[in-house]
Amino acid sequence: MIIDAHAHIFPDIIAEKASKGISTFYEGMKMDGCGTVSELLEKGDKAGVDRYIVQSVATVPTQVVAINNFITESVKSHPDKLVGFGALHPDFEDINGETERIISLGLRGIKLHSDFQDFNIDDEKAFPIYEAAEGRLPILFHVGDPRSDRSSPERLLNVVKRFPKLTVIGAHFAGWSMWDTGAELFDHSGVYVDCSSSLYAMSPEHAAELIRKIGVHRVMWGTDYPMWNASEELARFAKLPLTERERELVLGENARRLLGEL
Image (cartoon, rainbow, N blue to C red; front, top):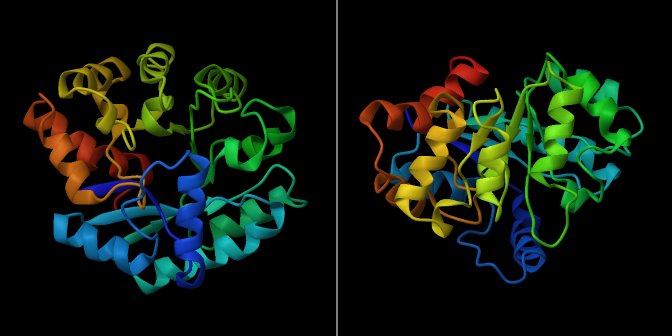
């Protein structure tokens, strides 16, 4: 089974605008897709992807409820394909209540992007989210940006130490654009990572080294759709000098172990 462990989706009416906004934030970095569910499934299914972990980021607190409703409805429309992560924001007024609702809706985790949401990962105002999720839901953190340390690997490490029972997924090898730092800090630490938006920037040998340094049982493959498409990312992954067993773990088994049978 191939599982895309990191994909973003948006309602059709705003998908193109949202995707362009991501491109603008990352200073014109190209976007392969427009961010709709239909396009994600069309491109991914053609590449051989079986399941997709989908999410969206609440850039302001007022978006939280609507995003969680949208992700839930998307999963209900494609129950054999989509697994949903909910949204939260440190300034949302009822974090505990919405966490309970996320669980009741059948969503399987939480996505945070502190650069988009304007907070430091280890800021105390985010602690209520970590407390509500600890031992209950994994949190997928965007990690890394050379322009700011809001999402730095070092700040994520502070959270890991402060909340030892929190299941943490560090996107982009736990440090986009600072991949070696992420791998060094989370060397066999118990933190999960995905390798989305990373393989384009390094040699296959380097990527395989990072996977083994972090621990092959903790790494998941993902596209960061609509940033990249599945065919492109699978082609990059195929070049990595990994064993067949290592490939199976990264492409799907690790995500299934983390979230249960998918």
